[in-house]
Length: 190
Image (cartoon, rainbow, N blue to C red; front, side):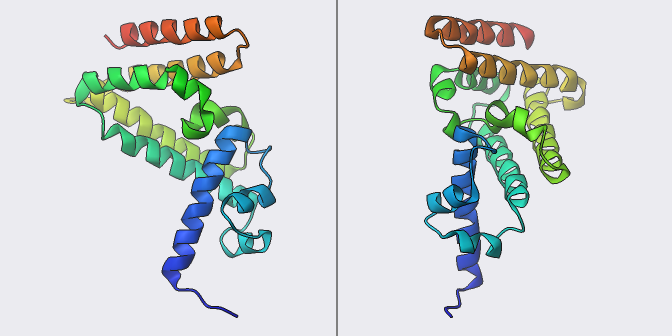
Protein backbone atom coordinates (compact mmCIF):
# COMPACT_ATOMS: atom_id res chain seq x y z
CA UNK A 1 0.00 0.00 0.00
CA UNK A 2 1.31 3.41 -0.96
CA UNK A 3 1.51 6.02 1.81
CA UNK A 4 1.15 9.67 0.90
CA UNK A 5 2.39 12.66 2.83
CA UNK A 6 -0.18 14.61 4.84
CA UNK A 7 0.21 17.51 2.40
CA UNK A 8 -0.78 15.25 -0.52
CA UNK A 9 -4.02 14.30 1.24
CA UNK A 10 -4.82 17.97 1.92
CA UNK A 11 -4.10 18.96 -1.70
CA UNK A 12 -6.30 16.11 -2.93
CA UNK A 13 -9.09 17.08 -0.53
CA UNK A 14 -8.90 20.68 -1.73
CA UNK A 15 -9.09 19.54 -5.36
CA UNK A 16 -12.23 17.52 -4.59
CA UNK A 17 -13.81 20.55 -2.87
CA UNK A 18 -12.97 22.88 -5.78
CA UNK A 19 -14.21 20.49 -8.46
CA UNK A 20 -17.35 19.70 -6.45
CA UNK A 21 -18.04 23.43 -6.03
CA UNK A 22 -18.02 23.93 -9.77
CA UNK A 23 -20.13 20.83 -10.40
CA UNK A 24 -22.67 21.64 -7.67
CA UNK A 25 -23.14 25.18 -9.01
CA UNK A 26 -23.46 23.87 -12.56
CA UNK A 27 -25.67 20.79 -12.02
CA UNK A 28 -27.00 21.18 -8.49
CA UNK A 29 -26.22 19.26 -5.34
CA UNK A 30 -28.82 16.59 -6.02
CA UNK A 31 -27.72 16.38 -9.66
CA UNK A 32 -24.12 15.56 -8.72
CA UNK A 33 -23.36 12.04 -7.60
CA UNK A 34 -20.24 10.98 -5.74
CA UNK A 35 -18.89 9.07 -8.75
CA UNK A 36 -19.17 12.15 -10.98
CA UNK A 37 -17.59 14.38 -8.34
CA UNK A 38 -14.67 12.00 -7.86
CA UNK A 39 -14.23 11.59 -11.60
CA UNK A 40 -14.08 15.38 -11.94
CA UNK A 41 -11.24 15.34 -9.39
CA UNK A 42 -9.47 12.53 -11.26
CA UNK A 43 -10.05 10.01 -8.48
CA UNK A 44 -11.96 6.78 -7.92
CA UNK A 45 -15.11 6.49 -5.81
CA UNK A 46 -13.20 4.49 -3.24
CA UNK A 47 -11.04 7.49 -2.38
CA UNK A 48 -14.05 9.59 -1.37
CA UNK A 49 -14.38 8.25 2.16
CA UNK A 50 -10.72 8.87 2.90
CA UNK A 51 -11.58 12.57 2.69
CA UNK A 52 -15.24 12.96 3.72
CA UNK A 53 -17.63 11.11 6.02
CA UNK A 54 -20.53 11.51 3.58
CA UNK A 55 -21.76 13.56 0.65
CA UNK A 56 -23.41 15.88 3.18
CA UNK A 57 -20.01 16.42 4.78
CA UNK A 58 -18.57 17.31 1.39
CA UNK A 59 -21.47 19.68 0.65
CA UNK A 60 -20.90 21.56 3.92
CA UNK A 61 -17.17 21.93 3.14
CA UNK A 62 -17.89 23.06 -0.42
CA UNK A 63 -20.43 25.68 0.68
CA UNK A 64 -18.00 27.06 3.27
CA UNK A 65 -15.13 27.16 0.77
CA UNK A 66 -17.22 28.76 -1.99
CA UNK A 67 -18.47 31.54 0.27
CA UNK A 68 -15.00 32.08 1.76
CA UNK A 69 -13.61 32.48 -1.77
CA UNK A 70 -16.38 34.93 -2.62
CA UNK A 71 -15.58 37.08 0.43
CA UNK A 72 -11.85 36.96 -0.37
CA UNK A 73 -12.56 38.28 -3.88
CA UNK A 74 -14.13 41.39 -2.36
CA UNK A 75 -10.61 42.33 -1.30
CA UNK A 76 -9.69 42.79 -4.97
CA UNK A 77 -12.38 45.45 -5.47
CA UNK A 78 -11.81 49.17 -5.26
CA UNK A 79 -12.37 50.49 -1.72
CA UNK A 80 -15.73 51.60 -0.38
CA UNK A 81 -18.86 52.22 -2.38
CA UNK A 82 -16.98 52.33 -5.69
CA UNK A 83 -15.96 48.73 -5.18
CA UNK A 84 -19.52 47.87 -4.17
CA UNK A 85 -20.82 49.39 -7.41
CA UNK A 86 -18.25 47.35 -9.37
CA UNK A 87 -19.41 44.26 -7.50
CA UNK A 88 -23.09 44.93 -8.30
CA UNK A 89 -22.33 45.33 -12.01
CA UNK A 90 -20.17 42.19 -12.09
CA UNK A 91 -22.65 40.13 -10.08
CA UNK A 92 -25.59 41.09 -12.28
CA UNK A 93 -23.72 40.63 -15.56
CA UNK A 94 -24.77 38.31 -18.39
CA UNK A 95 -21.43 36.52 -17.97
CA UNK A 96 -22.18 35.65 -14.34
CA UNK A 97 -25.71 34.62 -15.24
CA UNK A 98 -24.56 32.41 -18.11
CA UNK A 99 -21.78 30.61 -16.19
CA UNK A 100 -23.26 29.46 -12.87
CA UNK A 101 -20.47 26.92 -12.32
CA UNK A 102 -18.00 29.78 -11.97
CA UNK A 103 -20.20 32.13 -9.98
CA UNK A 104 -21.93 32.73 -6.70
CA UNK A 105 -23.01 29.68 -4.74
CA UNK A 106 -26.02 31.53 -3.33
CA UNK A 107 -27.63 32.18 -6.69
CA UNK A 108 -26.85 28.66 -7.90
CA UNK A 109 -27.66 26.59 -4.81
CA UNK A 110 -29.87 28.50 -2.39
CA UNK A 111 -32.99 26.41 -2.89
CA UNK A 112 -31.02 23.18 -2.35
CA UNK A 113 -29.08 24.50 0.64
CA UNK A 114 -32.42 25.16 2.33
CA UNK A 115 -33.12 21.41 2.15
CA UNK A 116 -29.65 20.31 3.32
CA UNK A 117 -28.62 19.05 6.73
CA UNK A 118 -27.71 21.39 9.58
CA UNK A 119 -23.95 21.28 8.88
CA UNK A 120 -24.46 22.75 5.42
CA UNK A 121 -26.97 25.32 6.66
CA UNK A 122 -24.51 26.37 9.38
CA UNK A 123 -21.68 26.71 6.84
CA UNK A 124 -23.97 28.78 4.61
CA UNK A 125 -25.13 30.95 7.52
CA UNK A 126 -21.55 31.78 8.50
CA UNK A 127 -20.57 32.57 4.90
CA UNK A 128 -23.68 34.67 4.25
CA UNK A 129 -23.02 36.59 7.46
CA UNK A 130 -19.46 37.32 6.26
CA UNK A 131 -20.80 38.58 2.92
CA UNK A 132 -23.32 40.86 4.64
CA UNK A 133 -20.58 42.20 6.93
CA UNK A 134 -18.33 42.91 3.93
CA UNK A 135 -21.11 44.77 2.14
CA UNK A 136 -21.99 46.73 5.30
CA UNK A 137 -18.33 47.72 5.78
CA UNK A 138 -18.28 49.11 2.25
CA UNK A 139 -21.53 51.02 2.77
CA UNK A 140 -20.53 52.62 6.05
CA UNK A 141 -16.87 51.97 6.91
CA UNK A 142 -17.05 54.08 10.07
CA UNK A 143 -20.03 52.11 11.45
CA UNK A 144 -20.76 48.87 9.53
CA UNK A 145 -23.41 47.74 12.06
CA UNK A 146 -25.59 50.69 11.09
CA UNK A 147 -25.64 49.46 7.47
CA UNK A 148 -26.45 45.82 8.25
CA UNK A 149 -30.11 46.08 7.20
CA UNK A 150 -29.19 47.71 3.90
CA UNK A 151 -26.47 45.12 3.33
CA UNK A 152 -28.94 42.28 3.87
CA UNK A 153 -31.38 43.96 1.48
CA UNK A 154 -28.72 44.39 -1.19
CA UNK A 155 -27.49 40.80 -0.87
CA UNK A 156 -31.00 39.39 -1.20
CA UNK A 157 -31.77 41.71 -4.10
CA UNK A 158 -28.68 40.61 -6.02
CA UNK A 159 -29.21 36.88 -5.45
CA UNK A 160 -32.91 37.02 -6.34
CA UNK A 161 -32.30 39.10 -9.46
CA UNK A 162 -29.66 36.70 -10.74
CA UNK A 163 -31.85 33.67 -10.02
CA UNK A 164 -34.79 35.23 -11.89
CA UNK A 165 -32.64 36.15 -14.87
CA UNK A 166 -31.28 32.59 -15.05
CA UNK A 167 -34.78 31.13 -14.99
CA UNK A 168 -36.08 33.08 -18.00
CA UNK A 169 -36.07 31.56 -21.48
CA UNK A 170 -36.47 34.96 -23.17
CA UNK A 171 -32.92 36.34 -23.43
CA UNK A 172 -34.08 39.92 -23.96
CA UNK A 173 -36.29 39.78 -20.86
CA UNK A 174 -33.47 38.09 -18.87
CA UNK A 175 -31.08 40.91 -19.87
CA UNK A 176 -33.70 43.50 -18.91
CA UNK A 177 -34.02 41.91 -15.47
CA UNK A 178 -30.26 42.26 -14.99
CA UNK A 179 -30.21 45.87 -16.21
CA UNK A 180 -33.09 46.89 -13.94
CA UNK A 181 -31.52 44.93 -11.10
CA UNK A 182 -28.34 46.98 -11.42
CA UNK A 183 -30.29 50.23 -11.47
CA UNK A 184 -32.38 49.20 -8.46
CA UNK A 185 -29.41 47.93 -6.46
CA UNK A 186 -27.38 51.08 -7.06
CA UNK A 187 -30.37 53.29 -6.17
CA UNK A 188 -30.94 51.20 -3.04
CA UNK A 189 -27.45 51.82 -1.69
CA UNK A 190 -27.30 55.54 -2.47
